[in-house]
Length: 223
Image 1 (cartoon, rainbow, N blue to C red):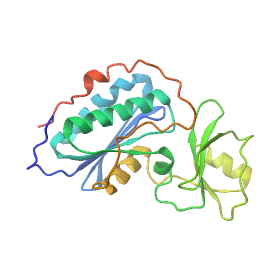
Image 2: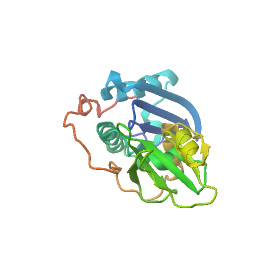
Image 3: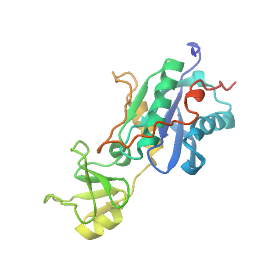
Image 4: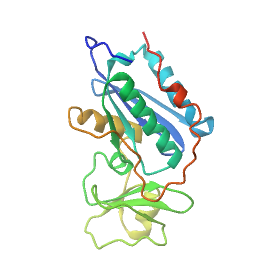
């Protein structure tokens, strides 16, 4: 799909499929205009219909998109693959960049180190990263070991429990993940980026079925 170069590109979309919900945020001129969220029990193949419904709600056109941001994980393996595939497909179709944003960066947007950032995993596990550029790891409340860091705060999954157990200040995210992804992606327009790819902390357990995603890779234009 080719975009009309004469059309003003003022829209940014942020996609998050890494958790139990499909999340989509649309910015216009870097201001929030729409957010949508659906439980994944309706299926990952609801991503494009959700986006299309949001575009119809404001009579938006795909030709106005300037960048697509997507959360690349960590999180739900199959959900991440769906989101990344969707972003890359839209990028090729519309001729605009797709930018991958990791979940740690999305969760911590608006805060500064020292931080312990946590992301939901499976069962009692969670993914964690010390600092905005530290090495991610997998832990539980019982196995988590922290260095002696002055004024360390915790943000993300089970942050309140972790803060209470380790005597850390608990912070609430300033934005939901798809909103953070949209903000970060908008700020990186014009920079060189490789196509987004899944970010896994532990080896993925792959489900080869992607539902109806492939058939939805050419979204309808809104007039």
